[in-house]
Length: 372
Length: 232
Image 1 (cartoon, one colour):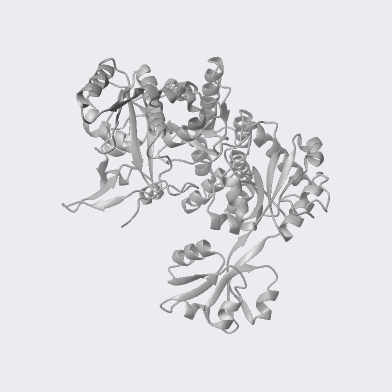
Image 2: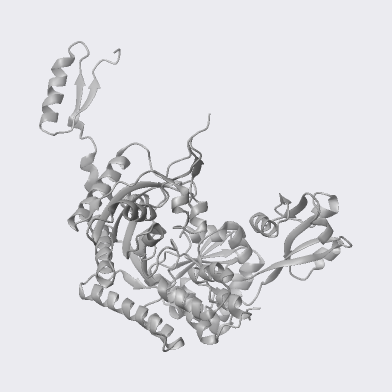
């Protein structure tokens, strides 16, 4: 008989309680920012989503043919599913529309926890929301969640895909090279960027700006260096100014301690169009989540609207929280909650159980005589 | 669940070094960069060596060397057990890891080539139903032949790949070629170069901003001493 693959978390025990507590706390914060929870279907039609996700993401989905011959796909990313629901069912609602979710997704992940094919995402999406303020809002929500969960080892890396795409467009390199250049920037490999551009005739200043994106540490000065390399470009100037204003506002709010401009963080779903961010944790060596602006995604379903959102992975949150989760231990059954029931007179003990439940206290039934 | 990493900003940088020739060349590059690590530091059975005394001044932080098998270096770095390491792009491709690659060493670059017996008509061979390819680089070989539309049976080996066509285990091999001497000794020659490998300084992608600063400093020291090779 086939055996289920190992799960990244203990399927039983108090880890389930901790997961639930994290979910409840996070959703309460989302609600506190006026987000309404939306239920996203587990199954969708693949053809509807095909144009909204890049080929690599599509390849990592689980698909099958239903009884009518339609190609169906298991929910692999919540954001495109919400974009579709909005475009097809919710356009009558006033904008901006604030939606939150706590959903399991199923996809093949390329990671060192490669057994993981299902994951739980907690996130928000703000639809019909152009400009700086919605981006600040989702960043602040993200910071509030992480702080409320007591996570002190995280950094938020902020980048802007519009800058990278502008530089690519100015470079005039063939589109077939884009994925390799993207990988080289993501891997902070200036040698590889230079190597890829070497024979393409790209102007040295554009090559320099692309290499600048691949700097290890980033920082606000990275924006100046890009503009110095490629001066008098309105698109780049506007995007860099936008990043400076975003950082400035977060600094004014006292929320920039863990925020770093790092323009090499350009990986993630390619439906992002502008500001994007990734939350990383050194102590667990992986990403906790990420988000950004995606102004074109909803339009692929026929109802164009700017949007921004983010999600956090519950498994990564668990990994960082669980070792220090003593404050959540109240969810474990306290010893006094265990009530032994005599099988020859069950009503006596069960009355005590009912009394505890009526007082909304924990009760755990056990039998005093194992013969029953 | 694995043990959380030590996030103390003051802890030494953990540097994963592959054993063998690459280790000697990497340590020489560190010495050229001004980190006066003694040549005999690795002449011990210890696998973790504290060389902080030699790095503190120049780098602003201590350093521990982890001596590992070549193919394990990318894994240790991706998992964050080591902060940085030295690895060839061939190992990185095979391990399929996401790590930063901020510096390319000016040594150790090799051609990846398909090689076979002298006189073999490679183009004719690719028209056969299945080409048998012996290699240490399974993932690279699979992706290369798939991209060329060539049906290939990949025969994974861990060493002495040159023997495979000589003894009839495979039609050709896909391997690193530095000077071509080993090929010639087995009456093989390069049929088709298909890529080039480079030796990289690699870094974990989730390092804190402060620790990335130390890595940046190391990259600057290395680049000042030995600029990266020309990107050809």
